Length: 68
Image 1 (cartoon, rainbow, N blue to C red):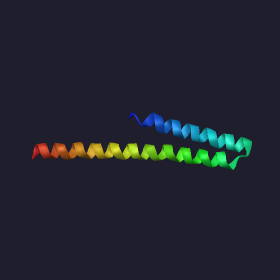
Image 2: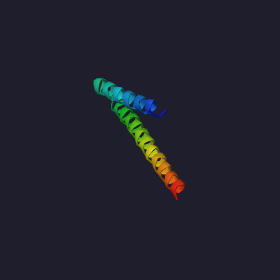
Image 3: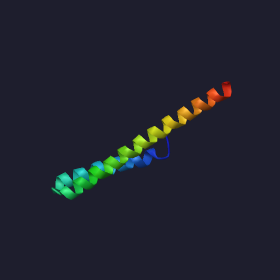
């Protein structure tokens, strides 16, 4: 687990909570804020996965370089 992952999970959880609070209080602004925060968490997760893939590819290329 990377260090960004707990932050992205926290963003997603607080986003969902704000959306639920917005639903309960009938507050569209709070719902929008929650959706944005959840989307931010999703984006952080996608970035984390992309970084992992880039690191794996860099390792693969470095291994090929050592072999040739």
